[in-house]
Image (cartoon, rainbow, N blue to C red; front, side):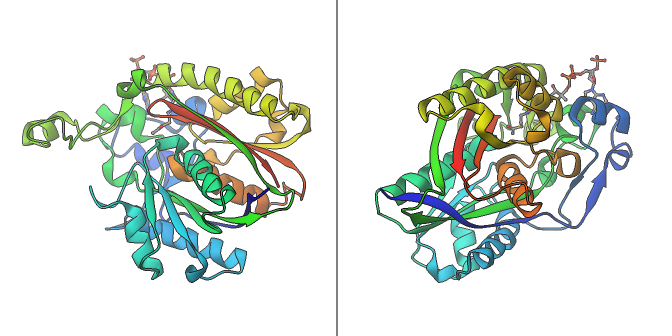
Length: 330
Ligand code: ACO
C-alpha cells in the first residue's frame, strides 16, 4: 500500500522582529496584556513589498534541500494561504514560476489555520492513489500588510505574524508515513472570523466608505473562536486516534496550530496530555495561520524532539470554522 512520508521540511520567517512593546506605539495595548492572554512576546513582519509566495519560496527551497531534491523533482504544488499575493491567480502559480517548474500543477487551498492540514490530506490522497510521487505542500502568510494598526483592530492585530513552512511529501511503502487526516468545517460560523473586503458579493467590491469603516481588515469574535477551538480540537484528536487504533499515551508529540498559548494549554488539560509533549513557538512568531503547523513541526524536528517511528499529532482550528488533525508516523 502506497502512502506518503515527509521527505524534507523547511521554514522561513522575515528578519524584522516586532515586539509587543513596538505595537504600543500604534495602538493602546501592553506587553503584559498580550503575554497574559495569548503567550505571544514577538512576531516577524515583512518589510516592503513581500508577498506570501516569496516567503514560501525560501521555505520550499530549504525543504527541497533537506529532502535532497531539486524543484524539477516536484509533481505538484499545494499552497495554503489566506493572504495570497494578489486576488488571482493563486500564490501556488507564483511559487511555481519562482521555482522555475512550468507545467507542474499548482493548487491554492483556502482553509486558513487548517490550510496546511487540508493540503497535507489532499497531497496524501494523490500519492496514495499513485497519481503523484512527490508533492510540495507549503503554508505561507503575510498578515502584516493587512492589519488594522489602530486601537480599533488591536484584538486581532497583536496575534498575527508572517512566515512560511513547507514539506515535501514523497511516495513510500514504508512505515514512516502520514497515517490519517481527519478534516471538518462548519460554515455557520464563517462570519465570526473573516476579512470581508474586497468581496464579490458586494458591489462595488471595495469603496472609500468601506476602507474608512475598516471592512478590509480581519474581524474576530475572539471568545467564540476560543470556546469552539477548545472543544473541537480534543474531539478531533480523540477521533483520529480512535479510528487508527493508537492510544494518546503512545503519542510522542502534539504539534498544534499556534493561535493562542492558552488554547493549547487548555486542549492539553482536556486531553490529560502532558504539556511538555505539546510543541509551542507562538511566543516567538505569533499566529502564522497556514504556516504555523509546518514551522512548528520543522522546528520540533530540528530540536531533536522526534525520532523515527514516533507517533506525531498535528491539529488545527480556525476561520471557516475549519479544523482537523493528522496522525503521522515519523
Ligand atoms: N490590548 C489591550 N486590550 C485589549 C486588546 C489588546 N491587544 N485586545 C482587546 N483588548 C481589550 C478589549 O477591548 C476588552 O476591553 P473591555 O473589557 O474594556 O471591553 C478586553 O481587552 C477583553 O477583550 P476580549 O476580546 O474579551 O479578550 P479575550 O480574553 O477574549 O482575549 C483573544 C482576546 C486573545 C483574541 C482571545 O479571545 C483569543 O485568543 N481568541 C482565539 C483567537 C484564535 O484562535 N483565532 C483563530 C486563529 S486566526 C485564523 O484562523 C485566521
